[in-house]
Image (cartoon, rainbow, N blue to C red):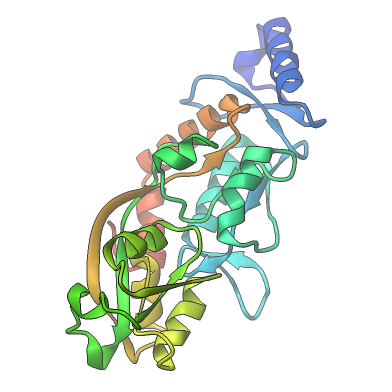
Length: 276
């Protein structure tokens, strides 16, 4: 274990704190000190010593997805969590893709992943299960139709027999269920499957996070369009187990440094085409 220079003079205190937190977290996790310069020093546990383990659905380009050529995770959030890991002085491992609605329960359970990074909107319900870092991106929802049907209204879709595709367990699904109660809401694993269904005529529309829908319609599904931008005013955060507050604190320190250095703005330009 490497300690920062500010730990050198207080080794006994730091070790005692690490032992205390490790004992509370359980699961055989190991304690690692935060090494960010601006954040208050904090001890935290990791599933694997020296590595921050990340859970994601890897199904939301350009935020998180799998490169078809290399098979590796990439995107805005993947670059971001790797930069956070660098700030903390640890490696970063992204687990194989999993269903979105399993990520928060996995982090809540603990022992298999340290953080959830998958454009997870901070909500009161989720905050009962996990802690969240400070937000790193604001977002809304986007409703996609065939480009030829882009003049559609919510009233047009809110009729019996109309199928609306959503990603299971998301805020987009919640919005559709609340605002289109007469339509048939079809829960799927990811936005790509949902928009594919719109393209083939299986669904009248699909609802998911606006940055993802905009990207898909601009790249892979150019015969589709974002017909309605839904102003839900959401914020994305990194999900952390409630028994690991030191990790949340350390990541917040790293995010603040990356924001101050302009790195997050660089990622916005790289992956989203412009600063938000």
